[in-house]
Length: 180
Length: 180
DNA sequence: GCCACTATACCGACTAGTCGGTTTTTTCGA
DNA sequence: TCGAAAAAACCGACTAGTCGGTATAGTGGC
Image (spheres, rainbow over the protein chains, first blue to last red):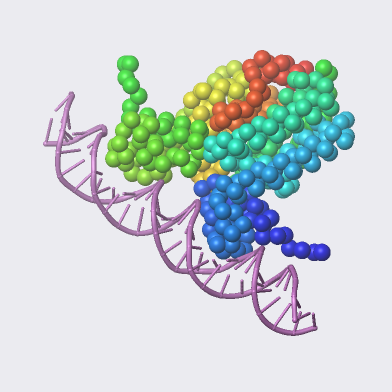
């Protein structure tokens, strides 16, 4: 079954991608529909309103985060490492979805804000179980956020060199030398 | 001179504040004018277009960043410390302005993107002069970005506890123990 | 008298959402 | 297995409302 993705899936992805690369303002119903390869009518058949589209995006994020948490729980010794490194992978479904929801949150979408808060709490808890030192967990999460923030600016337009994987490697090694 | 801020200043601030707290979509000409306490006609008297308003916002950021860089240059030994700590001060004019321009950049505003890139390059250079170790500078900047990103999410809606100054203090001490 | 506005009216472009209708796919009894 | 009916998927024109921008007549203070 080498299916093309379902229309519903394509519509959510289209919404997500436009949010990430062009911002909320550009994510019009027609733009979303066009990117998904359907008409506006086709979009509204599956999603009666933009809010329903957003709700579907939120659900997608929840599923992706749950999978991510499962990975981290399964390998506690590498959880921090994994968290930092995966922040850099702007192409991964999770990071893209996370970025899209973040855009909505910044547009003062209360639901998006609450969802992000819940996700961050969950990551914090898993990292606490894995690392066991609160300040180190904060350091790891802040570093991840920084990498993520940087990547999201770079992805939008044109930022200079900045954070490449090799640099991240060396930084991870640096904070690995911290004795606490 | 205990002037109330000039109308021009209030308009730029109104634009900035709406961008930060409600996002680009809510920053309509009427909303900006209303927040600044003038009529729409009053706004267009000073700024013929939204682009002119944005240009004024960009200029404000450049001025504020230049002042920030001057502080860092004057006390190289505390530059990294200062950089990290000031990322947390969401109320400062610089951080608010930076946040507003970031919102525009995420809405794929090329000028905003280029300006941010320039600013970040300048911060990097000053920190390089002060710290002298490239990876440490990246670490400091990423940490600052993470704090900033966190604060910007918290400021928007309702995020949980997260990063308070005391936590940042301890984290700064942690990375201060790194021998490189 | 002119500067810094207010108040109001308007235009064209654009956007979310609706609706009638069309095409495609699935179902199912003869 | 065929064909017709039903359900699902989709199209695109339309409506109502919003936004950026323009225009203009008027007001109060210096």
